[in-house]
Image (cartoon, rainbow, N blue to C red; front, side, top):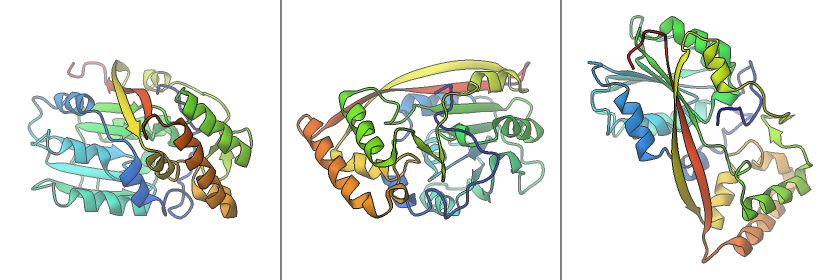
Length: 284
């Protein structure tokens, strides 16, 4: 998790270019946060009388949706994403459960975010499976400008089915490569060029340089159909990359996954990592 899976871009990805049509699949097929990680995030707000959450790259709102039932004192949430369709989905998910907590949305690159209401400083800034897309030093500078003195930045992730090592994921990668070429696709036009600077290095060079690392092993089970749905939400196997061959690809992938499934189930053993970062002198 601590090295980006995909290259960051300083430009916002347009709503139509990436993940817009897949927002429904994203909400349905992307794995949520482990309960232990949610409780860890909530614990960072002990003693904070009126917590404010800033969720960067919120997607369909998985992080705030998981936190609301646990962090009952949450008074405000800012949702940030470059994708308007994702933000609409996140707002819809949060509306029935937010209670008195207010929610604002910001469509744009994370490093350009500014609170809609001056003085409403975030006390917890989260970024789940999305920091690799961002102008990371700029994001951390933005966080330092707007965050409360004892704010916590949480950068989280667990890789993807592309990076997971198992017989079935290896075979799936080979199938994808047979359609799209050896290089892993990333973003709207680019390819993945290899690991870059680590998240720990980014944090060490920022004001949020006091970092603790937490690991949560997770075992997930997938049906072959769920994996196909998940692939539609990824930058390396989304339907637009296959163009008129997507139906053929999905049919071949489904057959492959069914052949590898044990009793109709595919198993993924992952590790969900959380980096909690604070400014020097911030609460431990």
